[in-house]
Length: 442
Image 1 (cartoon, rainbow, N blue to C red):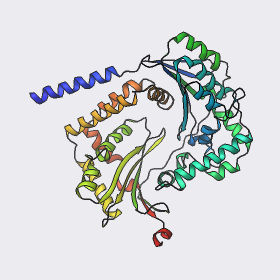
Image 2: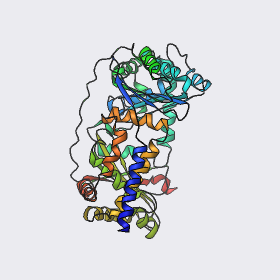
Image 3: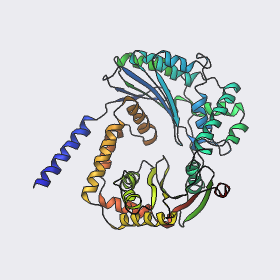
Image 4: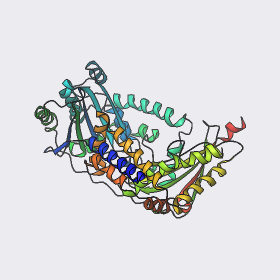
């Protein structure tokens, strides 16, 4: 009886948290097809103006990879009304901050200002869309910036080639096979007209969602500004997107990659998984939690803590709009080897496939997700990003409030069945990520 009362109390507490965290929003379309989402939160005198475009690395020409990420940099160069080099000065001089980021599926830009600068933020984002200046000076400048970023994040970073190598093996047909940063040779070879054509095709209002979130003291005035600055932008031609299908992996893929930046080898296994929009992808998130979320997780406790086979182990779901990739990795602790780690990781996966996790562990998973949900919506920046993402990539803005219900409805049986469905030896890549032979000899 006592346990039942405690469980009921916990459920009521979870329900209270979820209800308290519901995000109110209003959404509508402009005549040019741009989707608009407004979220009012007067708790702090700040406003975020953000635009997410449905263009990422997967929309690129295979001979011109890196374009989507390149535009993340290029579109801060300036506009017809914002001189080159002035963008960041305008933002900082008005008490704001700004940033942008790119994935395989979308590109996102945002400014955070004191709420009395709402109009400024809207004007700047409309300028980026309506009056970008794409010239050779900007292309050449940002080309050097992107090259330096690639050197830091990929070429000279320990284990920096891990994701590129995994992607190349997991995808043979889909554009997910290349990285967001793309090829420097492709960017060097591209003509100015190609960058301008990319902008004209994808940077159109009917391929974007505008989110205004924060202290919207006068919603009607905000709507007037939105109409004034964005409503006049011409609608672009509808974008036809090609569908790419990958053949199932039916036997183990093996590969070896030599990295001159490392001294300790890494064993990596990767499995192709379904779109992040599916229920199975959410179940895989729970499986990640079971296997590698913290020092009490199964992989860490067994392989690092108890057996001391590995210095580090982990598992994560690399979720994307069309497909996902589920990745496990480990670094051996001498005298153990990567083969020892692989054996122990496989044992834990088999246990998930054949035994139901306990009700206590399931409750723990749900509580952890609830906490992540609350944290993800604890700032106006997080809410704006989530609103844009749920609209553009999931097709349902209200998932910001209801996705937690999907996670809370996951069962122990589903965890077992999803592990059996996707995490099998004949469906995976086994990658030996090792120090380069030249370095080892030195």
